Image (cartoon, rainbow, N blue to C red; front, side, top):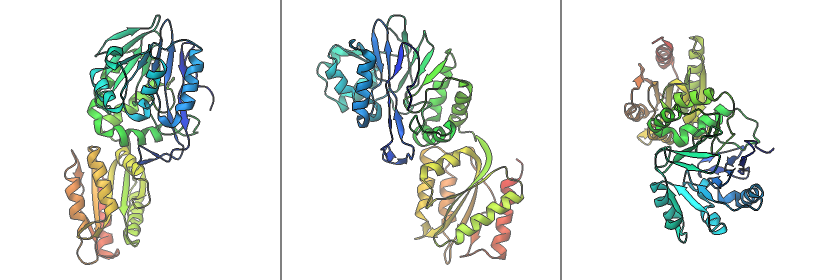
Length: 390
């Protein structure tokens, strides 16, 4: 990975982690993840967040090289989640004159993670709109509670017009990963921040009042050009509006008959001019990818086998994930399969009816073991309903 160039005064000291298998012990990250951290060199010096313990040695080495013998005056703590706060105590002990900058909630949580001698005397407690001068650079603090922890704040550097955006505008993937920003940023957003759309909207309104030249997140690349593109994506995502027109067919099949019906439905949708059709086998697709696609498209068909008087477990897991991330503003079709007592549709509908502003398409389709003439005709009716213009 080449050096990340920000400016002569603002130095990137983050690190890539290619060895990690699961981010937050649940999200697959085949291209790793970056833990971003920055140091500002002025009359006073300030570090913007630390990094995960997994990259301590690399991070500390970069920090020492950037400081080049200078003392460290401030550590700004925007987010206390351990992938960014892991080295707070180590830094506090290494630089005993360093002061820690955060809000009241920051320090309450910090005391739960660490025991730092003399912490209260070293705290600089800030609130909305407060500023901290480093010399020619001035940091302005903007509270962003529940994006996605209660203590989160972002920082605007006034002279260079930089927004240190905490977990906002972050993405999976190491910085040297050759991949599209939107795909992994979308998966990151909906699975980690997605529940907190209203809070993200509030933060976007605050950010709209700022003249931003660069966005510096805690994960993923520094965003330097075409910032309107990234901000627009966040506005769409956080307002729970569909990003693209299309139909996600998410299916949970035991022996293959529900899968065959899903493929038949995909064919029918394409014949009827569906803009995009995406098939997802919930038994084999990474759950975070399925959640991402559910939010990306404006329609979804849920197709599941019945199981133990309910619904096949991977479908229920998916439905629970959608519930926890506040899935809304979509059209849903329901297809159940059952050999003797179909129950999947009832359970699926009970979840779907709990989602906000969701239209459930009719007919709901019941397959008895395998598609036959009657259930294929019902499936065609559902395909009509999922492609009709609203």
